[in-house]
Image (cartoon, rainbow, N blue to C red; front, side):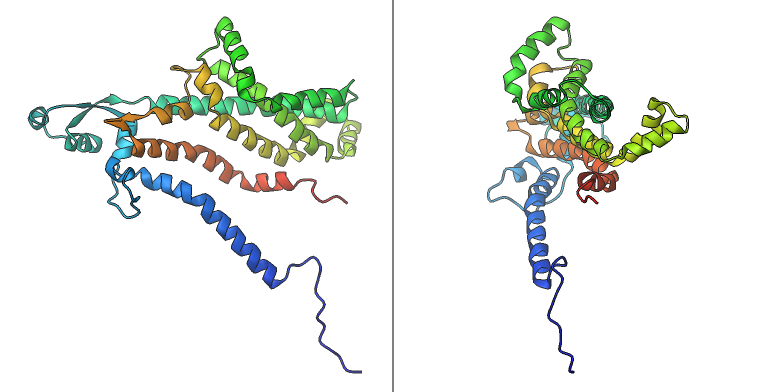
Length: 318
């Protein structure tokens, strides 16, 4: 009996054509999404004229003028006044003098950036901490009207910010929380906690109850079993939830514009109002945007393995 060549293939493993098509689509999507980001980074190294030139310049002479303008404030002076000044080795001062200006002081970008760090990470820690405890309670205990409560928690996420902006503004003004870091942390925590509860409940539901029961049989209390058994098992879900909460708090704009103006203002409402001589200083705006992307990018890259595992957790059931 002659043996023929089998043409059968697995229904699970993709064919070579499918791989090529999928690879092409992924590469095309990556190029489309990365292009605006790359353009922002390049604009940060242009001078103001190149930043607004038409047609747009792809090849240009790099300069750090945008970053110098981002971190300093400048004052225009006469050429005679500039010539009478002593020589300086400060790089930003040299760039300013070439444009007949002098550095008058530091800008407010760093304080606004620090506010973003404190508010975003503070609200993320609170949201995830409260969310994991609430999710554990909904997952393990018989809570009266549990489904209704879960839907109510989720419904708070459905409201657009503008729908509650005025009531929150009036309430914050009466409580003295306007333009404070504490007020923004509490607000972002209230917004993010619904997302945290729903995401973490799904992760905790996937953890078998038998693990906790075995721990309590060995003498652990409920709290000890939660801390030493459930939390380590839910690490991937906690990390994934923290990243999503951080992204919202880091990028939030509407409430930051309405409720902050000085002491607690974050970077998102500050970056668009960076004004240069004669209008918007686009290289400084691009430089501020580039630096603003770094913390969230680093945080996500460092925890990317947990993020991927967390997103796919429970996707395959036995």
